[in-house]
Length: 307
Ligand code: PPE
Image (cartoon, rainbow, N blue to C red; front, side, top):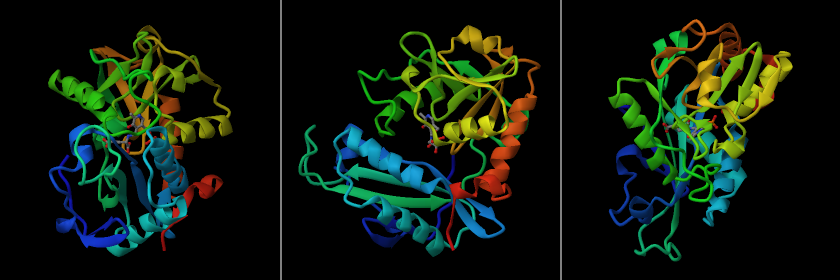
């Protein structure tokens, strides 16, 4: 997706002009993929820009780093403030936020010891991830020939840069086969998640999503949807799901910061339910958008107002 630059990038505690936030070609993470990142959204609300679940995202960034032995030289509170300041400096009302911690220039070879841990926070306007049309009508997905990384190989619960090589293979394969998105199965053939989204389905009024043990990231949107569904009295189960379960579902959808709540209307060319956005999906989607845009007073604690 093409980028729309903003003015300033927070880079190791300083604001630098967008064009000047550069790294050396011997940046360790560029070669070996060991880095951690987050994806966060800030929405325009009546009370000004608000970041959705900012603390949860920054905590997950720190957890991801801890899981792979990387030491982020900035604390949680410091990074929360840095994100808000980056939004203020760029005078932007609605944006995607990408904090990344990576090993910089200084050593080569696999051992990152001695390489500086660099942190950057970038914000830019980012529209719908799977298209405006996708939000309304749903997307067409392909079950990927690539399996989700197994926890014995790389940690799926951490947002590690290297994990996304797996996601890119699945995404590009799905797009080149004429689909909008992929779903990856784990090594046991159970549904894990999308390349950058968690998966939900509805069967006979029951909302289901695979457990983290199936290889899914503990999505913050996933968690928000589970909480909203519970509050709405929608029965919910976390259980292992097969492709067969999904094909037999009445409704299915993706969740993610970038993807928000996107209905899935087709899997491997077969319609899910009526092949349109289902009623429970639509209801959860509506509540989610009202929540992130500050129109739902019930979940105000999830919003971090910037100004
Ligand atoms: N699984 C994966 C693998 C994943 O990357 C994401 C977020 C999710 C699930 C959903 O998690 P959450 O955002 O906390 O609800 N993917 C990010 C990156 C997307 C990208 O293309 O870059 C995102 O949505 O920001």
